[in-house]
Length: 237
Ligand code: PEP
Ligand code: MN
Image: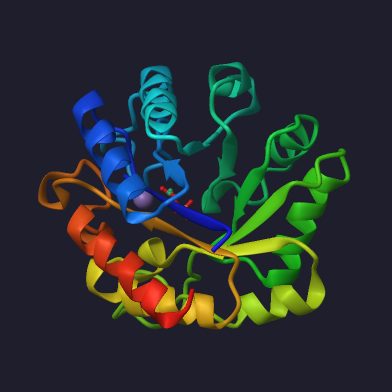
């Protein structure tokens, strides 16, 4: 698998990010994710550790031989991301054209998450905003779309994988955690994503999901992440 991205929804402390980094590295991940600037639905919930979080993420990634990835909300923050390897544009910012263009004018790879109410066509045009400014290193990330179904947080659009493969040269990864909203569905959805042809996965992992400051319910424990990794290997991915 080209991109096996794992880590907590949000970086919460040095101990937390270090524990998760070591665990996901051992299990086979190659990129450490972690949010430092969190676009939470409510302004009254944990908003992330900011610049301090980025420093902790970068250090934990380097110590464990991983690349780092984190979400950027505002191009004015680019300088703070100088030690982060991969920049992420979140679902809520997929059509923030100022941000897209700014990340098109810098050299790092960009993970572009699909807007949860955006069509594949709109998503590909958003990618063009980055590419047309000169940065072709765009990695698309399907993370679930809003439908009438309420058994899961969003509906993972597996169809997006073959459709993107048919219409674009860009790599596509799948984030089953934000789609499912429940950790129990993450392993089967991961297998479905890879079977459909995805180039990688982004998985939320927390050392203590019950006490996570964000998205604990959809986060795998290090033990379950190791189980996912082992099952994927056995399935031939
Ligand atoms: C995230 O990856 O932590 C995140 C906020 O995801 P999304 O933008 O897909 O909701
Ligand atoms: Mn999250």
